[in-house]
Length: 298
Figure (spheres, rainbow, N blue to C red):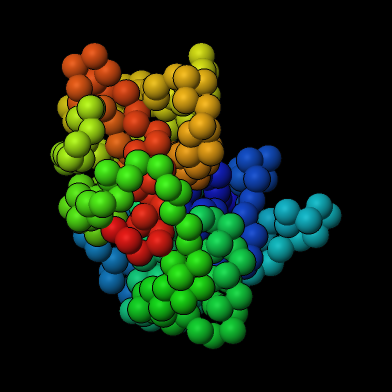
């Protein structure tokens, strides 16, 4: 059968780099062949009810597509989780890739990776390099192994910029503001979740959001993206003007790269709740919060 691989989907962002060591670019993320596909009733039944309700089914077969290295064909024996289309003119969507044995530990790995990724603790490139190496060496069998590698090889080397000292003096605020249910329990397009981020001694007031974002770009000297707001409606958000604080440009870049990595997924971001800038993305506060979480300081 032919299947569709979304560019910003879970499979391409997390399971491909972990298990195979590559990420497909947009020109490659359309359709692929899935041959000798056998339906796995037990794997399908063992899913969460929310996955079954979405029509997701497990198949074991051979995934075939062109490698990022042009001219090289990839053939991988996989367990594919497919979301079947509601109309005959659509292709099944590849949701994720699992090990063929369907072990409980293996099924915890990619959701845990995405949880770290959502909080900016890891990047897709770190999954492709650090975690892929550990995976093929047999050092990742479950989520506990992922956490151990993160702590030893990433968290211990992470850097936090010296900006926003008032925020850094209160890491508990970030911990509380970014506390949400496990990523696999939150529907991708559910309304924005918001918690206060009351930083003592600063002029502006802030909150922290967890929301689905898309269409991340820089325009009119601002970072923009569209997000699903607290009412479940799509809304455009933008940052403060970037050029007015050139000494913080590295933090603006840090936040923007994070947003691009989370495009078409749920992301966290700080925003202003003071009247004259209500709803503005606070890109520097976002970047420092992400850096502190990556370094284990929040």
